[in-house]
Length: 305
Image (cartoon, rainbow, N blue to C red; front, side, top):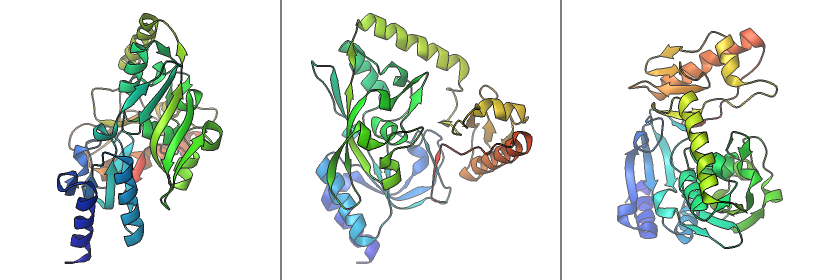
């Protein structure tokens, strides 16, 4: 048996044959609906399985990528080598406690957590209700919207380190900043997040969630595949406004386009390739740099390039 076949068997032993998909197209697992095959897509259900997969990858020098719902990922058309660890629906338990705390596994969606918090009369997570993706990804990126961000309500994060240790980081130890964290810098895999929320009337919480949803629907191209905001917000500026001022709103390459509805989004108009998206990003960066002297930094994570 060759090395790839041997690793396939080991992965299957760790999580079950049905939870190891070989050459699985990532376009099925990203909100951009773009991406070639993952060499292995693995669907763990328990922390022990995640630790076992990490150990196998470390022992064999196999690249390991952690994926949630694929809401902030652009995967290469040629695919991604190594193991893509999908932490989503099968690793998504949410527990609410009477003291205002919520514990969520990394694969729990932000929307599901916001709904659970609302049902329990716990406020503070409304901003995240319609942020696509999981709490694990939100923790790594310190996701935020409409004046709120994860670091405002997170108390701790449980992580798996590359060397196989499971550790619990306090909010201070997570070192959250704008779209950054120590988990991102150190390559930690987020396993669970603890939130501390405040008690409020569920009807009032729901009203705020509905208001934010309506504002998103009015301003963002939610009806088209994308990876959310394509660029980080430059200090002192808004990326969308810079892109508009540079005359790039509506700019299109192949099936990828700067959204006519919101210039901060690159969308898949149909049949877009990762190469199309990369070219749109490069064109926008060049135009904004020439117009305003500002370098836009992509927020979307690019795999396999």
